[in-house]
Amino acid sequence: MKTVPARHIGYCMGVRRAMNLAFQALSRDRARKVYSYGPLIHNLPALKLLESKGLSLYDPLNPPPPGSAVVIRAHGLPPGEEARLKETGAEVIDATCPKVARVQRKVGEKAVAGYRVVIWGTAGHPEVEGLLGYALGRGVVASGPEEIAALPEDWGKVFLAAQTTQDSGAWVAAAEAARRRWPGRVELLNSICEATEDRQRSVVELAGEVSALVVVGGRDSANTKRLYELGARSGIPTVSVEGPEEIPSGFTDGLASVGVASGASTPIWQLRMVYQALGSMGRSSERTLASFFGRFFRALALSFIYRAAGGAALGWSLAWASGYAPPGIFFALFFYLALAVNLFHGFLDRDSSRFNDPDRSEFLSKYRVPLSCAAAGSFALSLAAAQALGSWVTAFVLLHAALAVLYAIPYPLEFFRVRGLKGIKDLPGGKTLSSAAGKAILLSFPALLVTPPLIPRDLRGLAVALCAAGLAFVHLFARNCLMDLQEARGDRSFGSGNIALLLGKRRSARLFFWALALWTLAIPAVCLTGLMRPEALLFLISGPLYNAFVLARFLKNPGLGGFQFDLYLDGQFFLAGLLSVGYHAFAAAWAGGPQGDGGVPVRSGASVANPSGQDGSLSGGSCAFS
Image (cartoon, rainbow, N blue to C red; front, side):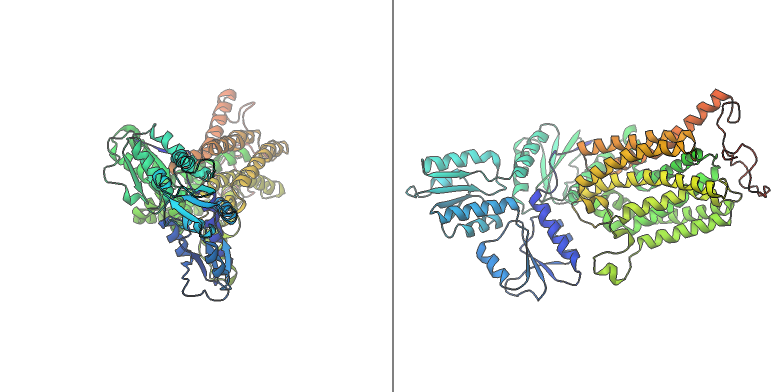
């Protein structure tokens, strides 16, 4: 079964702005009380998330304590209520949607000019109540053309405005009813938000392409209700849900495709939960070879096995490019330690992954016991591999593991607490930078530490290791940036450890583009120094070119992530390994072996466990540094 997202999803501009203002207020000073005047938006899961971060509902009968802050909801307030709120002395943060505020100003201007104001909308809706407040007692609410036709005909000048989340298709009928009722005396303002129109149009388009439709959003959300009505009107099976648990049992049975749409107050992470749950339901109901492979690769990706193997493949190709043939035990060291660290971080970061990657969060919870055993076993195997390579490598692995723990665990320090941070990974860019740096060091420096060393322990050898670490860091950093861009679509649920959240998605994309350009120039420059072998040029294909392709695809169609995005993104590391293997296979076939005339001189790792070379040299191959 195919799951297809609508073209316009996630928060609209006004809702995103309100949520961001609330998150900023909550993170500015953890000791300060922060309230919202009424539900900030019409989405219960998002409101529960804010509540878990410390946001409370403002009670007009109980003035807020000194130093507190009150956030005005995205729907706005009547001017009288806003004035009374400011008299309390609390900091007032106006999160009114700018497009709603524009309609408020227009309604106020027309009311002062003597117009009768008609608000086409839903009576009792917070936005409509706010607009009536600006009408200065000269406003009424009409929910359809028939109610407009029933209003007094002898009114003088009339101003008709729409609730911003109304059905754009019904505006023509409402406007025509107003023209007939007050010919030549009515002024019209089609104030329906473009985001509302875009979502309604995309639902109509999607309904024509899929077998069924799931609309995700709050039960109190007016625009979500209208999306559901449009879907149901199209004739295909349509349901409206707030979360995956509300999808009817058997809803996907026998369906070729299901569309997923969302209201303007639905966060991407909520939509992602439903999207990935539908994918799981489709896979579980299918018994084809393709579905088997889908479940197999999903397990590889969600358990971090695929990522760890990709990192080991990258380390393997870096070793060849550095001038030595890596022994098989190096691959085991890279793989097992990376798997253990990734599983450890995955279990500690389930709060974030619940929103950014709900499929992985559910997978880790479901298989918690076997995966915990796998993490412990992988760490033990990495220590065994390190011990076979020498005591310095063992010490290095233990230090790497200790730093991985320090990176992930929360700190009870005042510096972090008052800034709303938990630890190093929440520092600005900390998650993106530190994880790339840690893995880059893991993939490059054991060659110096092994007994005997695979790279000479001198300045040149250190320079080679640093070049390899630099190439690995940029490769891993690029991968992390693309993952950050995907996670940033979670609508700012979590903090500044993500660079895309820190800089914004557009600036992050531009920064990433220039980083790719510099990376493209850096790889040939490193080869020209003679520190890396010419085959390092192959990283141009698996590095800048691959990531530029992924970035272009992401900007064109961001999608909703999931394990497929992980497979796609981490494929660059396997490509690097395959290119290295292919290069050496071709060179060996061309020259009759790795040591033949015109072959590829490498430093062999065949005797890495043989301590007989007291001078640090290794037998079994020529040295690229001699």
